[in-house]
Length: 111
Length: 112
Image (cartoon, rainbow over all chains, first blue to last red; front, side, top):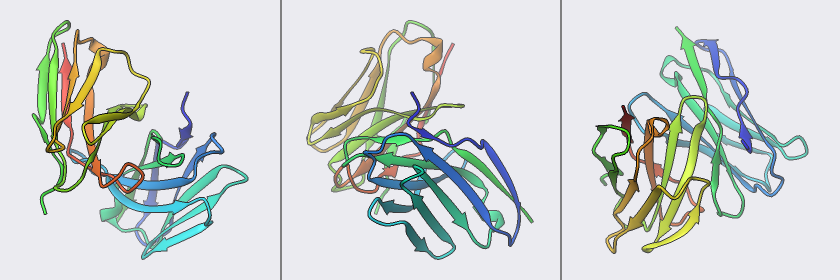
């Protein structure tokens, strides 16, 4: 059973606009969340993380929002750039026991 | 410093065969995790090794096994290959499992 879900397999956004990638989870014990970016023929690379004691974490153009009551997190990319085109995975863990990944969202930023 | 390396990058096997994949973590990292990536399933956790001990295991059949050596290098073995084992196998290392993981480029396994 998929404990972390990314319901949008793909997303297209114009360059300069905001990209919003969503992720839902079912396990209320998850306390650490991450976003990874993956280019073809490469392994995922860490992008940004957030612990459950926060509701927002920002790093440059990337911001992750966590809504614990809704068991939902989102990644905002502002402004979107063509180099951001990749597959984005969200992941969650419970006290470092195991990481659960979503199925990924393929983002295309149109120049 | 050098990243996570995985060998081989590509493999083609036939049903019933077995395969061994190798992963060399970033120097100093003692935790190595393995994931299977298939279309529509995302990354599915296989197992995690820390200091030569399997610390966590995902929900995969016993045909999937692994080990870790004293230098933290890890191998994953799949016996009696099935068509459904065709996937990208990713290895990730970290200082400790709860920290950020660094992924290798993966081994693309095709089972015919």
